[in-house]
Length: 160
Image 1: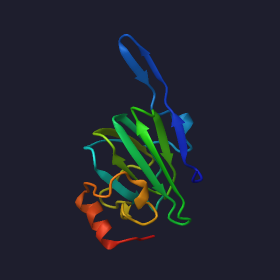
Image 2: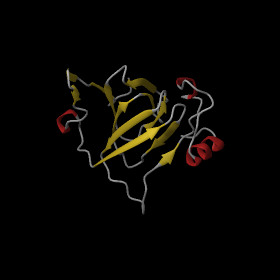
Image 3: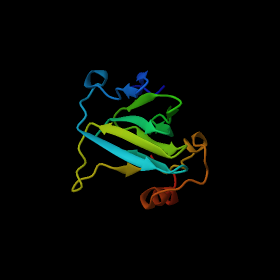
């Protein structure tokens, strides 16, 4: 596993009314979260790979559905992937400058806590193509639905 990446088991407490699950505690993480984001993606969407040069950490959790999280250490080329969500209730902690993305294996409601607030005047967001040879085989699809930004990164080809 890539240094600093953590897979955090999430426990569901269920009874006849439904269930309850904690998805984040500050004590579980080496840095404090500063913003929480929620994203809904349809099956077949890939978001990423993205990275933050100033070292923003992320904590990923699927609230509903299944997602494949893919990570890339841009220096060593080491990769990590995990399917998370309904069938595997875990959170994945992504440290620092690792490139990261996820694929919606089903329609998915995806939550991510981040250690830096987004600054539209000075965004720290950079892209690597989903089809980069170091990660291309980790996705379940080879014809994903992409945002314009992620499609543009794919057209530029592999990058560091």
